[in-house]
Length: 390
Image (cartoon, rainbow, N blue to C red; front, side):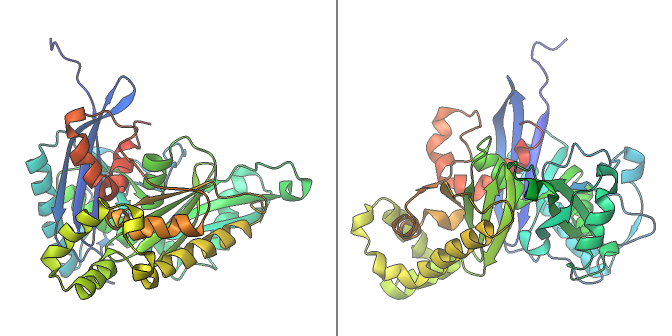
């Protein structure tokens, strides 16, 4: 008999355009504990081609969504069904093998012990919307949701995996009680199958797929039910999520991120791309008043404008008219660039700060400085690993 209690591991995997990030957590005294992590920085053409994955039988895929694991129609992931044969486009079969091998290598180097994983789908590939319906019986809800969403999708609904979740009605207004608001998430089945095949190649059991919004809510917002905006500033895109009552209600995205700031610094200071990283680190140690905000106004203005527009979209939705944004949380690798935080604070008189995705994680204090440095880049991955713990 072992002297130590065996702990189940929970693996979060984020495969993106710029590499692979993994986090393994284990449950210790009902709290998530950091076990290991790994990162691979490498450009990946992660999106499958238009002829992706044709199945000989109905696809068996993990559940898609946010807090949807409690639904009664969670897809069976038994061993027999996971081995169903697939016919793949040759180009995608090559990608699947390549990315599966990369994932295996990251896991090997990080000494991952878990064989179960939760992964994210890129928000750019996922349909996300709030729809309003007349109040209907729960048994008829799926039919009404699909009928309405069918008109909104850019491709046939038969080719999409659609999940939905009721948004709690916080008001007692009889007018709003006649309606129900539903959060709908949909992703192409071929994309879900593509990701599933990558994980099968890597020897992992992919238990759930969900959007980045739900992972960020879990790692950065937690039990806070107030209205919060999370801004995820990546290398190429910046995503804006408004989260209310623990659910991501709105999502908008602009094609601008850290790469734009890097290029601007190269031009302003005459430094090489290899030196930009050190320049940004040096700037992060400077006081806000030491960095003239007007130098970067042309770069931060699109972010400022999008924040205002996202707030306007949210407050114009039925039931949100009286709600007020309480805080703005920044995350993503480029969020540490000081002019971004200072510009947002100047324009919006609310609590604005860099999120700490490690706040709910138990880890050795000797790792704190290193984890703080990589935290903004790992928020999605941490949220994925937390899914089956919190």
